[in-house]
Image: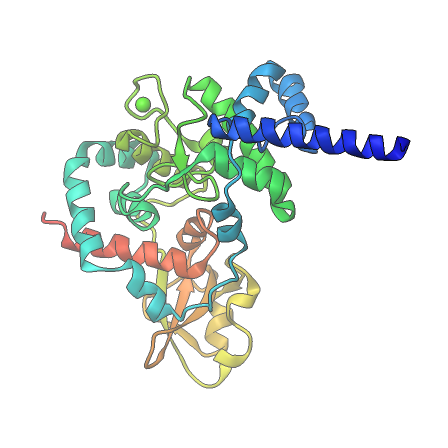
Amino acid sequence: MYKNNVGSRCRGIARLAATLVGGLLAAGVQAQDYGPQHSDVPAFVEKMQIEHGFSAEHVQQVLDQAVRQEAILKAIARPAERVKPWHEYRAIFITDKRIESGLAFWDEHAEALARAEKEYGVEPEIILAIIGVETFYGGNMGSYRVIDALTTLGFDYPPRADFFRRQLESYLVLTREQQMDPLTLKGSYAGAMGYGQFIPSSYQAFAVDFDHDGVVDIWNNPVDAIGSVANYFHQHKWQHGAAVAIAADVEGDQVAQGITLEQGLEARKTVAELQRLGWTPRTQLEQDAEVMAFEFDAGERMQYWLGLNNLYVITRYNRSVMYAMVVHQLADLLREARPQ
Ligand SMILES: [Ca+2]
């Protein structure tokens, strides 16, 4: 009898709870994904309070409005695509439309681009190529709320939770500094933001107020975006006017002997060493210059390249040699197509 009573009372409470939840949902109030009930949220809130002087209530109020997005978890866990050969990868990014739009963007922002070159020593076409490849000159900056991306990945994606929680930390600090609403800014599913797709830690380290209006706005202000990309390259030791990559001819079967990307992205071999292995640069280089040798599948044949310091600098933006070469080649095409 007693047990039955308890059971029926529990069922009664469960029914009451279900009714309440149903009522709340009907009223448009959703259960919070990142309320204090989430196992990792309280520690994060405490960290923001202790290390950055936020009020715990404020941080929790912001997190209460973040929404877990299944599409973000799906996007980040998507099985890696077949690695495209160079000629297919290049065709995605280097198109007539991307060159035409780049020239129009150059005209529109010629003053800011010239000033960025003067102040940071980075050529306009490199800044344009980055913005063109990342977001089609601001046309596609991402449609997820940054707060949703960083909470979903920081609290519900264990493989990289630490990384994304640190980005969330940076994000809350930067939006406070800039007096921006952390609930409205948008970005990619991984929290990359604005014209140049800066993650929050890159924003904190490299973004600048290039039009001096008191706000570092890489979302709506192309001038700030231009200065910020230039500063990113400057801080990573871009060399103005220096070559990025030199084509090479290769003789014999030395190519197969592991002189490819396995050695990583840094320049590790001297020109003299490579020449002994059968590589001949098509442009004269110093014998002791350090280069990164790599090959690309160009479709009907292979291409051989020697990457220099500036190629390495582009890979600091995105750690892929194909990405860096697409940026370099798009930049060259923009420079060549610009009316003098
Ligand atoms: Ca500004």
